[in-house]
Amino acid sequence: MDFAKFEDRLGIFFKDKSLLQKAFTHRSFINENRQGALEHNERLEFLGDAVLELVATYFLYNKYRDKTEGDLTSYRSALVNAVTLSDVAASLGMNEFLLLSRGEAKDVGRARQYILANTMEAFIGALFLDQGYAAAEAFIKKHILSLIEGIVANKAWLDAKSFFQEKAQEIDGITPSYAVLKETGPDHNKHFTVAVEIGRDRVAIGEGKSKQEAEQSAAHQGLKVKGWL
Image (tube, rainbow, N blue to C red):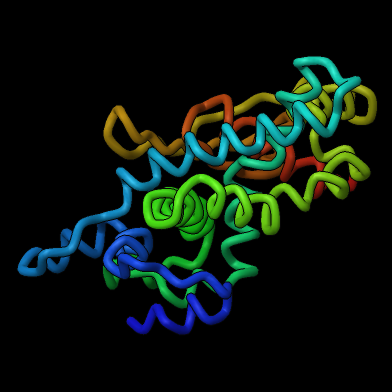
């Protein structure tokens, strides 16, 4: 894989090229290529998640000085959730550079969205290790935090689950329910797939690292499907 093309695209050039490659290496690729010396990206993902949360929190704290803790938490959740991160990753062309097993490479649906979000966090972790906090902060501000104006304007920061319930009760007269469709991964890195339903109608499906995050994702998708945003 020629990661130099990705570096050229971003204008970010790694001193340690192995860190960049590791950021794009999914566990499934390692399982299928055990003879190599590669490592998967889960430790980098763990680090990048923390760096992203700190940068986003500090940014929002300074930008919205009149907002409550609850509002800031909602803004941050809208910025760093799997849907937003996967969209940013896709816009940067990260899909082209993923190192996946043959099976994972065939799946371009919701599972790929989750992989892209994790890869974005791993990339941030790799950039932090390679070039320090300032470089990671600059990348996050340019590609992720720049979305906040649109998120606030479109009310994408609202508690999607509560908003969806209000709309469902108001329009359909039914309280929505949530069903866990799938739970995968080890205890330290769970992945939940959840459906939101109105009566017998399955409206949308969401994913996340917890049931709560997956329910929020499903509710947000449901708001889009219903045209309630």
